[in-house]
Image (tube, rainbow, N blue to C red):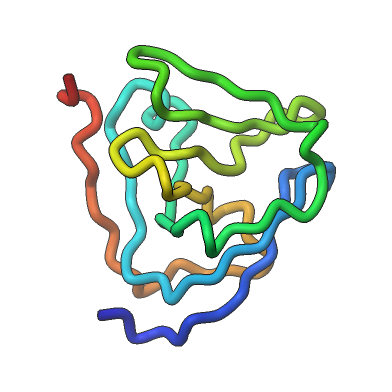
Length: 120
């Protein structure tokens, strides 16, 4: 159980073309060891699709898929920043790059190491 209350957080890519909001209480953060997550070095929070709102920039998003082509990784095609992805194992959830959240400090939130490299 998270010690933080459920709150709304705004986020964006570097150039501001892609903007979104999430509602979360940050029960944990995730780092994954799959090939793309290692290279983008993102720290993520999982949110249900009902707690995610794309506010601006749908036309500025580009999508990348690999391996099973189930997970959908979204990047700003203007500045290249990874903002979020639609998860492979739980496709009704998004993995949000917490480094894109305005003024967010991840200090004190447990980080779970996801084992993505060995997924079939």
